[in-house]
Image (cartoon, rainbow, N blue to C red; front, side, top):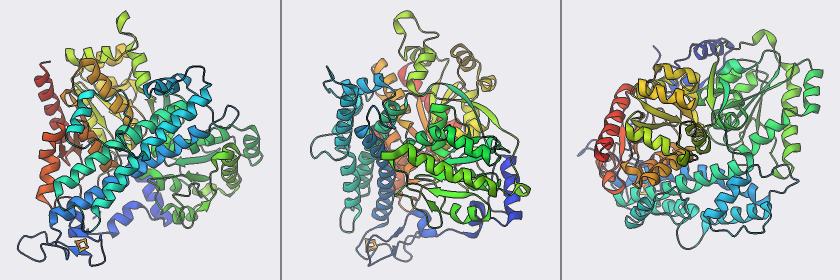
Length: 628
Ligand code: XCC
Ligand code: SF4
C-alpha cells in the first residue's frame, strides 16, 4: 500500500510508472522511505539553537522533559522555530528582490538589460518623491534603485511603503509596534531574538515575526515585482499552454526552473538567437523549445507567453520524459535530487547561481555583466546535448491545457475599462462596484506550493472550483496558479462552471474566473489590488471580503507569505499543518488572538471543500459587516 497518492494528473502517474521502470527515484519514493516523521519535529518541539541541546520537549504533559536545558518551554521553542521559518522565507524573497534592484542600479541604455517600462519607473519615482525633472530615465532608474536598496538596510526610520498601503493599516502597524524598519534589519533582529537567551515570550516572538513578514510582502516582494516590471515590462493578458505535453519530440527541450527573471529574461532572448537555432538545426533538431517551471515558469508565461511545463512536483517528472536536454536553474525550490536523476537520463542539470550550487550539477555561473553572452553559453550547452537523446526511452505526455496568464493590476484595470463609466476609466472602480453589488461576492487568493503529502494539485483545484461556483473571483500565483492552469480553470472557458453572476462579469470583461497573477513574489500584485480597492472605498483591507489560501504549501517562503497576508488584514487558510501544535499558546495566537491585532487570522483545514466553505462563510460575514 502506498502511503501517499501522487497526482490528480494521469500523465504524471504514467511518468512515475516510467520512472520506476527506468530505476529513477522521485520525491514520492523518498516520502515513502521517510516513513513516520519525528513526533517532536512535527509539533515544533525540538530545539537545537545551542550546543547544550538538541532539547526535545515531551508532547505529553507531565511525562518527560517540559523544558530545555536553558529553561525554554514548549511555547518558547515552538515560537522560535516558527519565527526562524519566517526569517528564512523573508530572506529568500527579499534577496531575490535585491538582485533585481541591483540590476536596475547598473542598467544602461546600450547594455543587455534596459528599461522596458518608463511609465512604471516614473510612477515609482514620484511615489518615492524622487525629483525626476530634466533627468534622463537611466538616471531616474539609478536613483529609484538607491531608494529601493535603502529599504533593505537603512539605519533609521521605517520602510518606504507603496501608496497602495492604506493609511489605516500603516497606523495600526505603528500602534502595534509591528511596522518594519528595514528588510535586512527585521530578518537580523528576528534571528537575534531566536538566539539562546533572548526572546522567551511566544506572543512577542510572533509579533516580531509579523513585522518581518510585512517587510517581505510590502517591501521585498513589492519592490521585486515593481522593478521587474520596470526592467522587463508589465505583464499583459496572453494565452499559452501548460503541462509536460508542451515538450517537443523534435526540438531541443530546455526546462527553466527557479525564480529570478534576471536569468530567465536572458535565456528567453538566447533561445531566439539565430546562431544558436542554426546550431540546433545542424544537430538535427527543428528548433529550441523553452519551457518554464515553477515561478520562473510563471515569470516567463506572464511576460512572454512561454509555455509552462508544470509546478513543483513535476521537476523530476520532466527529466523522466527523457526528452529534456537541459534543466537550467537559479534559486529556490530546486530538488538537489535532480543532480543524480539527470545522470540516469541524458539531461544536463545546469546550476547558474552562486546561492544555489548543487553537488553533481554542471555549474555555469550566470554573469549579469555579460548577461546575453552568458545566457548563450548556457543554452549552447543544452543544444550540444541534443545528440545524446536516447529516442527509444522518450515519453512525452499528450495532454496539455490552454490557459490565460498575465493579469497584472494594470492589465486587470484595462479589462475593467470595458465596462467602466467614462469617469472611472483607468481605475478599479468597476471591480469595487461588482463586489459592492454582490455579483462578485469576494476575492480569494490561491497561492503556494505542492507537497507530496497531498495528492498533487487536488486541494488547489477543488477549492478554486467551489469558490468560483459561488461567485468568488479567484486570483492565483506560484505553483497554485500552475495547478489551476493545468486543470483548465485559468482559461476563459472555465467561466462555464462559475456561478451565474461571476460568469456574466467574466464574459463582459473577457477574463477567466481564475486570474493568473504571476510568481510568488507577485503576491505583491494581490496586496496592491487589495490595498487599492480598500483605498477606493476608504476602508482598511481587513474590512474587505478577501481571503488567502495556501492549500498545499511546503516552503518557508509560504510561512512568511501567510504571516504578511494575516498582518495585512486578510484571513489565511493553510492546507498543511504547520509545525506548531506543540504549543497551545502559539496555535491560539495564530488561529485566534492575532485577529485582535491585525483583524485577520489563520485557519488550518486539510479538507479542500471545508476550506472553501469556511472561506465563503468568512467572506459573507465581512460583507455583512460592510452592509453590502
Ligand atoms: Fe516554490 Fe515559487 Fe512554493 Fe512553488 S509556490 S513550490 S515556494 S515555486 Ni511559491
Ligand atoms: Fe536546549 Fe535552550 Fe539550547 Fe534550545 S536553546 S537547545 S532549549 S538549551
